[in-house]
Amino acid sequence: MGVTGPQARLLLMLARDGGHNQGFYAEELEVEPITLCRMVDRLEDAELVQRQRDPKDRRAWQIHLTNKAQTQVAELRQGVDKLMEDALSGISEDDREIFAGFLDVMGRNLGAKRTMQEASNG
Image (cartoon, rainbow, N blue to C red; front, side):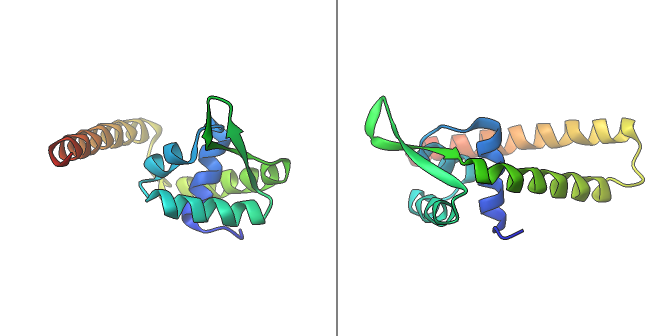
C-alpha cells in the first residue's frame, strides 16, 4: 500500500488518537525518537501527515493526518480487517472473545514487566 509496517501503524494510531507530540508516538510504537522523526519526515514528504507546533510547548511538534491520508487509512483498515478475518477463520465467536481476553492479559503482563524493567534501569 506504499507504506512500511511501522508507518502503517503510525497512520492507524493517528486516525484513532492524533495530535500528540512525536515523543508520545515514539513511545507507543517502541522506537527511538529519531526513528519516529525520520518516519514522520517520510510521511510528511508523501503528504500523509503534517506537523503542527504544540501550543503548550513551542519546542514540540504535534502530528496530524492530512486529508490525503484518509483514503490510505481506510485502505489500511480494510487490509487489517481482512488479515484478522483470515487469521481467525474457523474460530467461533465465543472462542474469539476468549482469545482476545488472553491477548489482553498477555499485553498487560508484558507492559507491566517493561514498566518494572524501565524503573529498575532508570
